[in-house]
Image 1: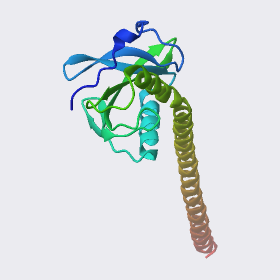
Image 2: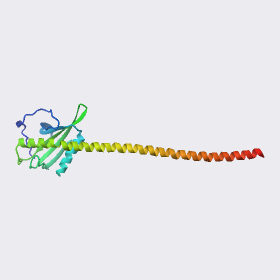
Image 3: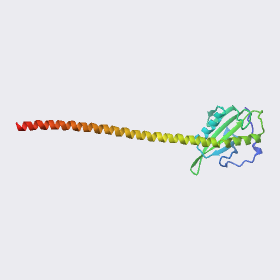
Image 4: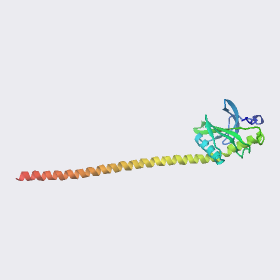
Length: 201
C-alpha cells in the first residue's frame, strides 16, 4: 500500500524527549528507512505494554502479525483514529531510567489515497489513541502482578507441601525405628530369659 504521510512539517518536533504518557511525533526505522511515527512512553516493561496493545486491538476484533520486533495490523480500522482502513505497525523500545523499566510504543500509519481526514487530524487522533492506552497498560500491569503473585504463592505452597512430605517421611521412618526397637527389645528379653535358664540349670 502507498504510504500515507503524517506531514510532520505541519508540526514542531520536540525531539525524543517525552512526557509521562504524552504522545509525541518521532521516527522509527522500518523497511530499512526512517519512518515518521507517533509514540508514547509508559512506565512499564515491554511485555506489559504489548499485552495491553494486543488486548485493546483484540477488543476491536483486529488480528496481528509479528515479524522482526514489529506488530502489524494490516487493513484494519481503528474508529477513534479514522474510519479509513489503514495498516498500523507498532514497535516497542525498552529503556531504563532511574532504575525503572520503561517502554516507548511507536505507531506507524500507512494507507492509500482515500484516507478520511487530513494529516493533522489523523496525527491528533493517533496521539489520543496512544494516550488512551494508559488505562489498558495499567490494567495489564495489574494482571501481570497478580499472575506473578499467584506464581509466588504456588511456589511457596509447593515448598510447604515438600516440607510436609519430608516430615511425614521422617515420621514414618521414626515409627519404623520405634517398631524395630520394640521388636529388638523383645528378642533381647527372650535371649536373656534363655541365658538365665541356662545359668540356673
